[in-house]
Length: 333
Image (cartoon, rainbow, N blue to C red; front, side, top):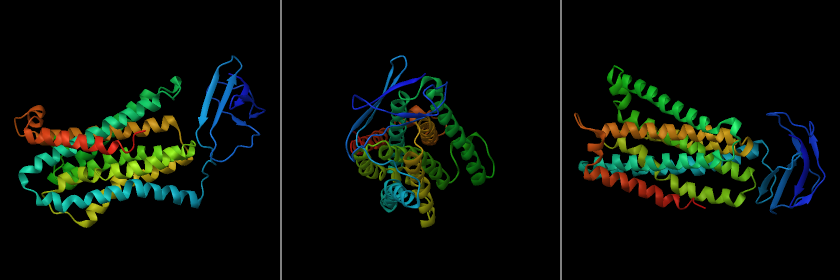
């Protein structure tokens, strides 16, 4: 294609383009517009090709794009800590309460965990489909989602085998499906949640980079409250065993720290294809953990459907889903 004209707020504007107006397939270029933009003002930028096709981009709030420096790394890193690490660690403080309830409610809380994770998985798929519409067809964004999902799913299966082998002295299908120790299962859940939070951090960082400052601030508040429930999901396998404070800190960091990487990536190197890959990783990891938990609910000789159809399991599943739905309303918009 060739670049013929550039519009700023529907007015034709002078511009220069490097390396040139003619772009070959997959070639990139930098367009420079001598325009005195004003901080916090909205702008609509349109590039018109030689054949008259218009490519439009709206900047809702004009602001300087963050540049990599110690200061900006620190600011976006702290955002990741505030949104991801602290809420997950706060959620882990529910452990004494969960241990004080009657053991008959254990099935309820494990199913509650499944409800939380199912919602997160569906939410991740929904986010990826929204971004998919912005990715050019030749990049085959759907396959990026599939690649990330399958990679995370089978990666956690392999990790489950390792954890099961260490806990029981032998690896196999049973070890893959249900790691021997509660800490092993909690770690799998934390990894799945961490990969999901990677996508959340990406959304926050990208909101600031793309001039959506108000949206970025809204996402920070919403995700912070939303993520406090994720600590409950990590805790469920630990209710019956002894747990050290150090283990809880490790689980909290595994589940929350990827948000920091996400905010850095979104702020400094945002890419729709990369977002699809990250979201695919999150979805695959979450659904693998859901599968592990579902198989763990089934007693010997019992199908997964029969196990989940028990009253306490049904109640826990829907309660977890509804809690995540309620907190997600703080992020919607």
